[in-house]
Amino acid sequence: MSHHPTSAPPVTGKVRTRIAPSPTGFLHLGTARTALFSWAFARHYGGEFVLRIEDTDVARSTQESVDQILEAMRWLGLDYDEGPIYQMQRLERYREVAERMIAEGSAYRCYCTPEELETVREAQRARGEKTHYDGRWRPEPGKVMPPPTGVPPVIRLRNPRDGVVTWDDLVKGSISISNHEIDDLVLVRADGVPTYNFSVVVDDWDMRISHVFRGDEHVNNTPWQINIYAALGAPQPFFGHVPIILGDDGLKLSKRRGAVSVIDYREAGYLPEAMLNYLARLGWSHGDEELFGRAQLVEWFDGSHLAKSPAQWDAAKLNWVNAQAIKHTADAELAELVAVHLARRGISAPTDVRLVAMCALFKDRCATLVELADWLAMYHGDLGARDAAMDALVAAVPAAALSALADRFQQVEWHQVAIAAAIKEVLASQGLKMGQLAPAVRVVVCGRPQTPSLDAVLALFPRETVTARLRGHGVAGYN
Ligand code: GLU
Image (cartoon, rainbow, N blue to C red; front, side):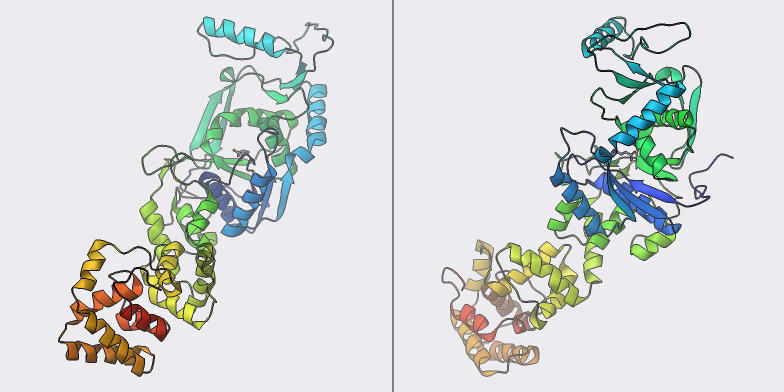
């Protein structure tokens, strides 16, 4: 029976999923989303999730990239039950499977030199044909081809010449690709390193992967993989090809257009649970639900309602999701998190009750932890630059009013209620309105014209900092 992608996919036996990043760069958002889908699917069905590092592109794979991938997985909380498994540690196994295929007639050695292959391709191009391997080493009944000496062979798949490869994609529905359109793929290169399509099948088979979620750039690879499964007599997993993520500008997300590394978002002050929430909604939905946590995602994510069309990145929405997550994070936890961002600016803030109270006061106004750190910097000597508009707000109030406020502050108990009363007294004695005095006080003490309730904001400064800044207004430098 044909599977309809708006319903949950067939699940029989143990669910095992995997993410198989190539360590040629950071863990980018697209891969993180696929990892998230694979992880949530496995967790939903009580299955297992495997991390495999596809490091066969030896020239471009780096340990640094592996480390970054592991770090990003950890940050997002995508825990895996097995791995990381490195393909370069499994070369023997690929060789063994390839030899078995040669013995069984589903693969063969090809001794073409790169120059020969190029000549073939040139001729095909000249005839206006799509370039493909011309099958010159493909074994056929009665064909005798003595191998040349000194040419290290590659191993090729003896791909069926006829027929159509069809599968029920978990995301895209039924897909068919004719064998006429695909050639005899290289399985193992001359140096013994397998190609992606071969190692991925051997691994998914050996690791008993039941459902493969991956980016839809791999749709064209899947027919080869299915043919390899068939040649091996191996059970074929279900495939779900997830559409790409488009940037705000409608083009494919890429490094050139803004950050696409998961870790960059940590640096920019996003919370992992917000990232997880936002990424899950890119190409998947559960009714109208926009805000949900990890446990809820696992409960809902049964593999249904994966979108067929590309998802669009929406930075404003991510900020909204992150702002909600910040709002719902306990103040003490936020203090720990924001301390890291303050430290980056050279501010070492103890995570004490004062920092916790600051987080409570400002967290409703922040889309990111960086914005929260921006607010809190004023408590640590960093007032930033003052512009002409801010100068004008200060100039609109007599300097005497500000020193009168400093004097009054000197005499009261230093807490919010007393501070509020002191401000009222000075307003009365100076004949000023709150709307005049408060902006000037904010500029000289906080370095910005707007803040939450002034008394609450001031109460979190040491009294001496406030009085010194009030007295020193108009002087270059604040401290
Ligand atoms: N290494 C491949 C990639 O990063 C894995 C594709 C797959 O999941 O099969 O695109």
